[in-house]
Amino acid sequence: MNLFALTNNPAARIVRFPLTQELQAEISAVFAQQFIAFNKGIENVIPFDGRYRPEEGELLAIDDYVDIEGLAHAVANPLTIDQFDPQIHTFDGMKALFTRHEENGTNQILIQLFENRRVIANKGLTMFFSDNTFKRMSESGLTLDTRLLAVLEGGQLKFQSFHFLSRVLDMSEYFKEATADEVKDFANHEKLAVENLNNFVEDASAPIRKKITLILQSGVLDNFTTTQIVAAAQNFKVEIKTTEDGRIALPTNSTELRRLLRFLDEDYYESPLTQTHFVSNSKRVAD
Figure 1 (tube, one colour):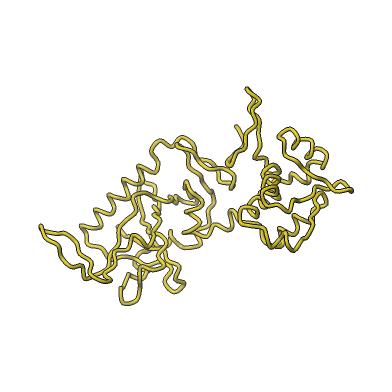
Figure 2 (tube, one colour):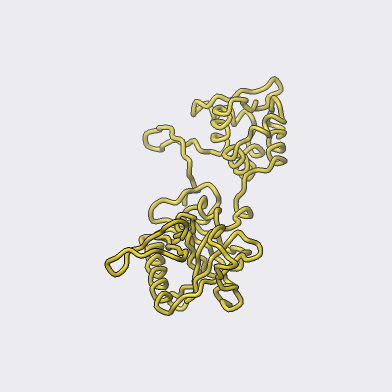
């Protein structure tokens, strides 16, 4: 059993921890239990598209995940990975811990989030309790997280929180905020009108850029006329102002802008039974 750390240090992206046989067995057991907990009660594995937040009993998955960090290479060739040396390496900059796990003849890579609060530093006077007495800690150490962040099996990456996953792995290929050029393209769409393009781009916050990405991906502005969009918005009491030439005026007020973007991203829906109107922050296409 080998335990690895993924770091943000380009010179040592992955390091391997030297472990005693006893500690190897204990860590292996911890990860095995966390793997069971990760999969317990899971009824649906849903393809990730950036729009849906999984509920209890669900996981998100990316098929054909490209392992650019080389996690699979590390677990398959552990002796090619530099061993942790406190004279060279530090716990600062470590993003994740991972190890290989085998279940029913299939190999998985189990990934934990690693945060600085899990470092046991020897700065100052640090004590630990052993053999009925406190002893001074002379070396640094670390603790494991209590759950898995993700599981990589073959080319499929399964996880629950994209937010935390993106802190560890480069997920820009799978979902990204709109760039400045994409924000400009959005604002310059033939169905939209913006009062000041430069201010619109500069003021576009991360949530607004994410919404713009989803709206551009959906093609809603290309597939529906301005009249259709305005009429549908009236059903949900979302006010859309238009210019004299019939374009949708992008609000300068951030609250109104976010309301419009949420409507264009189809976050508004109506209950089929009570006809009650709702706003959702998570959705996927129904089966």
